[in-house]
Length: 493
Image 1 (spheres, rainbow, N blue to C red):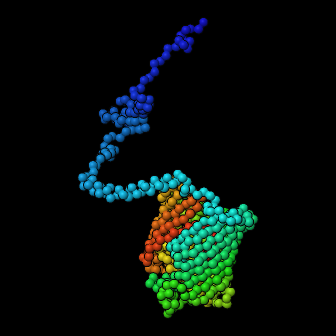
Image 2: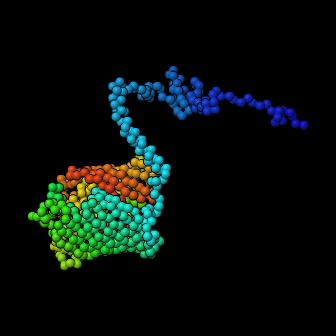
Image 3: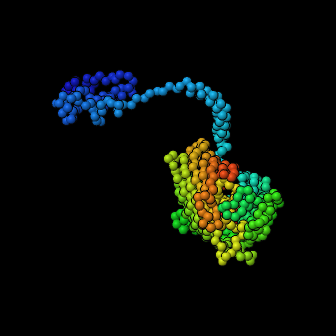
């Protein structure tokens, strides 16, 4: 027979422990009881016992060690400084003057937010644009700030051309400075390794700038001439290693120049009549063979923050018009991207070097010398501002997010500050800090829904000019389909 006291129902229940306050306060009390300072004489180590034997007061201890004696070095006093009356009075006009600006930015922010909710900024189509013939897409194009002035045109893209990865491109534009541009090409993979590009173009600029030869050319010597470029070529690319590619490019080009039809009072032969450049009022026809090695392990997005790009190329020009103009063009470029202390901030660095080397004492026409054009810009100076046998320079950009509604790698607008420095020279003896030209500026870059650069607008300031540019391309990052997209091979080294 079981005892009644041992039956579960007859056991004596213990009264629950009731802690003062709510549940969280009770937990806090328990933690203080477990971790707080013990009663006098509890948990005293050998040092404390020794101090008692000598008559000194024992050092209080916590659960995690000895507690220091209260002193100025272990005590922090926070003082609340009241705002003086003069500062309050000065803030009143500040808030009054700034009120319209705050209202303006608030209205703009709310407008952009409302448009974003309608998905007007999220272009995630593979190839955005209006439907065109033969399953193509047509996109209006607007550019400004270059030699041609403000240009309006279109771009036609035909995806899956002759191959699931193939692409056909056609561009045409007309500018306010009477410049015409028609370019096109195709990109077709040949098997698993080789990539083929075919490109052509015709560019006519009525107000091409010429300041003189060398880095010491003067801004007041600005002149104009009519310039035409026509080219047709192909490029083959093959991977060599993990991020290393080999590219062979061959193209025929024809460069012609004469007096301009506009701004005739600043014609080249009037301003530089005493020292006309070689090849003025003539043509230069020939074949070019370009071999290059390109290393590219950058993040393939519109806002890379890691990786590097290196390029080493040599081009041989062989004239076909009987002129003694045979020469080589050496090109070296380097780009690096770094993620800074904040994941949304990055630093981009770029350097370049170009050198024309005449062969057999040839006289290179001035239209085939190297100049400060894309991608080897010196922003803050007009394109073709410096023309010489050699150019050397670099760029530095600090980038940060200006408006990104849905995370770091989604569409939005990034801002950047940049610094450019460079020099054009005929001989290495002309190199020197006194001849280096510099420029600074600010820009905005729009990244589309496919994480690619959609457009950029920037203002650059130098000691000569203040230039505003709006472009659909960018200075940094190598474009593997450049020939197909109409990149002029005679001006991009």
